[in-house]
Picture 1 (cartoon, one colour):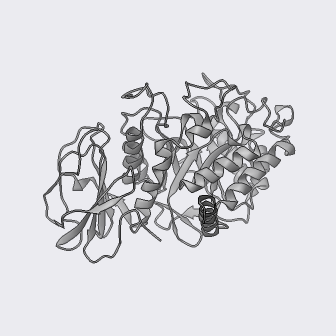
Picture 2 (cartoon, rainbow, N blue to C red):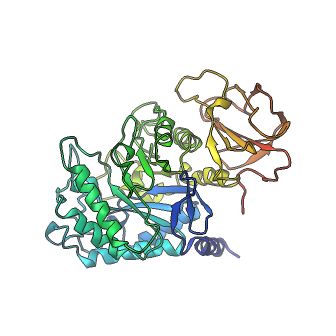
Length: 462
């Protein structure tokens, strides 16, 4: 069987696993699961301009590639950022007649239908943003125009909600890269749009919804909407800087009441101009992105989104790029981190997922909040633990909360997904651990299992 046939078979298997399964919040309110209760680890890609700038051949190529790389959620915007109201899609259509949210153009949304249905065939979910935020708030950037208000937001929300109410692979994301302005009606408008989507799903359960904000020091979506019933899980944008302690955002929301899942929906992008700590041509590099992703998930996130600077804007020759994209988007699909993100998802799903909790009490050393920061997560009952070492530094651990007298130890390589056994460790109150290699780019995960638990090789699961 040739490579193409193997890929098609893999995609078919993935499709059969996910097809028809809506995503919902787990019983413990911390994670996401499919309707039949299987753990769902959100591994997203921000393809904001997918509906607007890609024709069907490009859509097929992009979605097939991302499915093969292990992604399961694609972020895309109906009313797109880059002049999405006035610049037509590849078939010559714009989303609204006369830029009026109460009169959507069916011809434009026929192409959106195609993308959503194609994603469903491949087992992919669409994190669907009804609009980018500049259609409400241009702020200091964005082309707008501002077309939404308290009178029409619910109408549009209900219209787009009714159009896609029967699609099982839709996750709704209100907002679009904007924080509500003080002394404005922004919060009211977003709530109206969300209520329209909810109203469209009356009698149709498991409508999953969040809000995509701008970076914020503490809460993201939770700042304005945590108590709202329509907000099922919280979302952050932690920004495009390498030296930020993104895990603090996740911890903030994990401590809120009521309990809701949380994830980073827009982190440092691959190939993005990096505002701090740039090490190569002023752009982000894989170890910075890996560190942020593992930090977030080990801090309690229900998944993680990835982004590539050329891909989100679907940049190619002949288009004016935003913030210095380095290469055309089809080439950028194969950058290193796009092929490494699956190792994070596979690792988390290779151990009991819904009982996992963050636990920094396992780290006995005092730590500065910098790129060396070691972070720990474990099973609530102590059957396993994982400790992420961003730079491979020597650390003292407290393993007394884990089950048994001795633990099977593995070192997991986030770059390759490979794992190898290490010496058996005792569940003592102070165990000093040194990863296989040290320095920037030498990040490792120590996986500790109760002896006899039978979990298998980290990163491998059925």
